Length: 165
Image: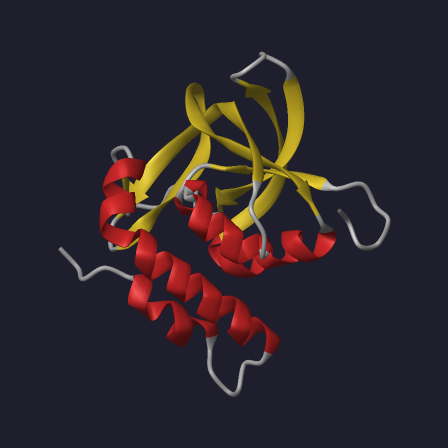
């Protein structure tokens, strides 16, 4: 899996990357996943953005998936997609299929006091409205990362942003 001979990574996903087509764009293959629960974090909506964030919150938990067998190059793709608003951290999750604990990388919103965080993010609602746009935009972001051609990443991801309410 890992091209450098290093052991493969596990990545806990909780938002748009739960969608198999979105994960496939990042990995350039189908994702091998296991269902998991992350304790001590809360998943929020973000005003003006169709994707969620997570931040530490002791009494909360987040359902998601762990993508297993992620190579170093694939992990770099996750870093590119998640961008500078998120910090990659190692967390312990609990598999919901067998209660086994495992380590995984995940992406935590850097601004823990962001006033644009609110409510609960809904995957099914997101899937109906935004999934196709994410697949196409993530494909463009990864192409941009290989060959920026003078463009800024912000110009490539702008189609994902929502009009202000």
